Amino acid sequence: MSDLRLMWRNTRMVVLCAISAALYAAVLVPFKVVPLIPGVTELRPANAIPVVCSFLFGPAAAWGSAIGNMIGDFFGGVSPGDIFGFFANLAYGWIPYKVWELIGRGQSPISRSPLGILKYVIACLAASVLCADLVGWADNVLVIRPFAMLGNVIIFNNMVSALVLSPFILAAVYPRVKKGRMLYTDVMPEVKLKPVGIRASGFALLIAGEGGAWIFGNLLSTGYWAPKFLPAWMIVAPYDKPVLIIVGPFILLAFAGLFMM
Amino acid sequence: MPIYLYIDRGTFVHRLHPTVKVFALFIMFWSVYWVDNPLALAPVGLVMLWIAQLTDSWPNFYRLRWFFAILVFSTTIAWMVFYRRGAVLVNVPIFHVSRLSLIFGIGRGIKLAELLAASVLFLSTTKIEEFTYGLQRMRVPYRVGFAISLSFRLVPLFIDSAVTIVDAQRLRGYDFNQGGPLERVRRYVPVVIPVFMGALRKANNMAMALEARGFGFSHEPTTFIDYPVTVADILAFAFLIALGTLSFMLYWTGLGGIGPLK
Image 1 (cartoon, chains in turn yellow, purple):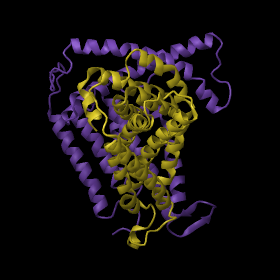
Image 2 (cartoon, rainbow over the protein chains, first blue to last red):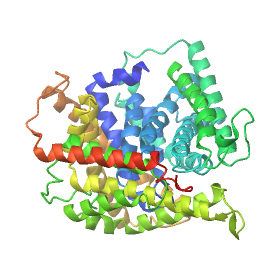
Image 3 (cartoon, rainbow over the protein chains, first blue to last red):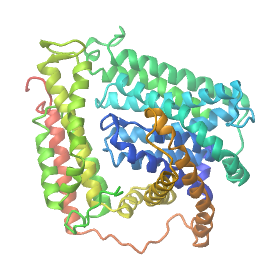
Image 4 (cartoon, one colour):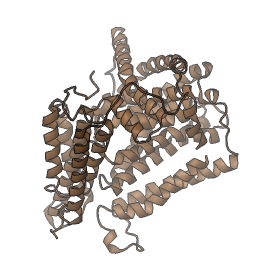
């Protein structure tokens, strides 16, 4: 958590945050015209930007992703669910570099080795799933959209951008940014990593939490699973209460893991 | 490409205190949230129509007309798949077409359209600096408010430079419309990279310029823009409280639900 807070003391990081947000929104707004679920999500090639920025600017990209999404939301309709969208996008920009710091082991994110590619996919998938879980959960609890509809579309959308676009942008930009000493590790050398054991435990909690939230969110919102321990009056469409009670703790668990990283 | 929705008209809504406008957006969300029945959503909808007329925000609504239509339609359809309650009226595979699912779906569609309308009205009458001022008055830290404000300002600059690069690449014979949807998206990578690098070049200078002007010296910097609280702000605040209470009462009495009236 400290890097997310500490970055606000560094003027260069504040500017990089604004630049990440503006770049995200600048690609997001023109593509508002191709909605996948109108009012909620659209074709988002812009989702490649937070991933790229995350590897470059770390915590500044996390806030930039959240702010950029908020700016985008203003042009495609704001709803109470967008408050959660802010935090979901914060996680989307926060997770890739956090996971990479743990599993990358000093390797460059533009490495083309099979193991490097696998690690990159894991980092992006971890970010996409928590982002989708939180937005899907919030919209289902607020009875705006069902979890099963939104949660899966967001994962698909984020992963397509992260796998099809981000690697190309990253390959072109990363060496230049590194040479210009603008990577977050250069701008904020004061941030120290936590012990590996704590970060690995955090990663395990993150995966368990977001995986559980995704599975139960889908099962509950489609009515495929009716938990016996809940009263019958709760287990009716739109399944907002079961999703709140069962999926909520998994999301909390995932965030607890993220804070530990 | 015009990306901002702000329309400078100088009406009393435009002149309201930024905090009242941010509060109004919250009250609109609150009012819409508690009500499910399409008919019970009418009072808030009428208030929005009145404000749209008052502030002359119709050009923005016209710009987004198809978006509103698709929003209501797709939401209604989606909930007819997931909201499987009530006696089936017509047998359609996958869909659960009942009176209850229809009312629920249409209600959700109108609800989302009203939420979108609230944000359109907010953006039509609020400048970026007013929005960030309102956030700061609501205790959002100054540096966060500054980053939001700067991001809003940079968006059109980045879009403009992207458009320039697209035009330059086209002149050199680069075809952006070749291939399938994914390939087309990927063909924009050569546009993103120069925009990205141009932005990074600005970052260093921007940071130095900010520090030279004392950015971060104080947590509560002074501002030359002053927004005094007027009688209109107090009246608007009272009206918003009344509207929020009315919507909650609709929920509390059961009049806002889609079941039988209590």
